[in-house]
Length: 236
Ligand SMILES: Nc1ncnc2c1ncn2[C@@H]1O[C@H](COP(=O)(O)OP(=O)(O)OP(=O)(O)O)[C@@H](O)[C@H]1O
Ligand SMILES: [Mg+2]
Image (tube, rainbow, N blue to C red; front, side, top):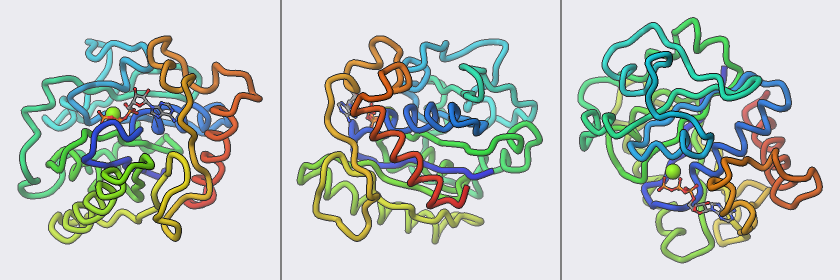
């Protein structure tokens, strides 16, 4: 099992879009894939056309409150979701006090059956992002080609480093920045970049992922490439 947090305190840089499309592509390749949402906005559920809460499944909030019997939602073959909702805000403090509460899922028998676990995070520098980092083996940062977004990458890296030094048992490996178009951080970039595409921007409205596009579509080709690069980086 490889656990990957996708972080950036700057909003709207493509965290959720990247998680959804990578997870979809990897699940299609046959990897058993889980998305854990830690964002009170619950955008992952909206994107995948799922309820944010259900009596039949476990939410991230319930796990933070001690639930050990974890039942993810099955979205489709090999793709599962642990949703978030506004209630998770109760657990959103400035910093983690004590150790991470989410990290214990690494030992959970249901969670251990997954090949890859993505954790989507809110656009904050808060304990919910620290929970995600503490639970993860790796993290990466999506970014847009705008000056303030590039500044945001530096701030996100500083926050992650602080979290690693302050929260016990926390040491995710930095995979790099996923650029939307080419930008200035060249040595820390993924090879693949994701273009700004209307079909990606519109896809949440139709609850579509790049898998619903033609295999020749630019969006799908780029996310296939990114998923291969990610597998290489995490050794899967
Ligand atoms: N490559 C892309 N091309 C076009 N639109 C995109 C692309 N990536 C993301 N978007 C759009 O940009 C907006 C923000 O993306 P997304 O919700 O993934 O960002 P986020 O970092 O998760 O935001 P938040 O910080 O609020 O959680 C969305 O409307 C999304 O559809
Ligand atoms: Mg998001």
